[in-house]
Image 1 (spheres, one colour):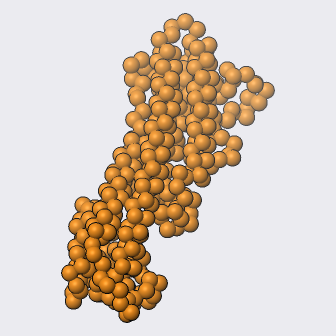
Image 2 (cartoon, one colour; image 1 turned 135 degrees about the horizontal axis):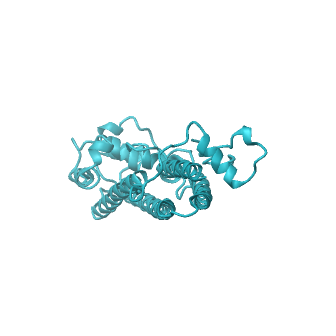
Length: 316
């Protein structure tokens, strides 16, 4: 099902049979739907109009909350690491101290072996904060030198490896970049909060549409007089709900093109939709849960319209 903006309609109403080309009334349109081969033949019975469970949106919300929790844990870990490193006494300046921005060939030698006690405390602090997070190994699977280089810069790790101690310059860089890593995660957590709010809003909107859908069908089931006129009215109102789904889908497409956080700020890629891929790509659900949920509700509305059209046909 197409959900691209600019299409004639996200959820198309089935076309009338060409054989009734001279008929332009709503009753003819409803009757045409009822005679299509794919129309549902069963009439909806009172009391069996099911709620639509918004599984995709609920699962997406749970995934976002879990990711937000992990991001905030990382933020706190980097802040704690920065505090611990900032409290250490750096080694005296030496003429042989490596400068930041130098070669990275020795980055993998930052392991504490042969280092002074201050550097060993730095590495222990990193293990006790960032690397001790419950999800660290599962999601990153990096050694300490690899993580230092990835998070705080290979030049910082190289300076530590070259000096085998904590120089004042390396200390300043570690503290500054750790706080930058924490700030980036704060921004990411705020962006995830924005998405959680958006998911809540769309669930509210979809629940409202679904509630009116069910009431319309249940209302039709309770009518004994003039069922044909009632069927036309209900079909028309269901058609309005279908157009609401169109509008919600277009709004979501616009949101996908304008994410709450640009990926280059925290994700390291240049793709406007990378924020959503980051959130939903690793999940078992669809890559676009909101659009999938709207599509599911649209299918349900079309199914009801087909049933109502059959009700009209039976009542004529």
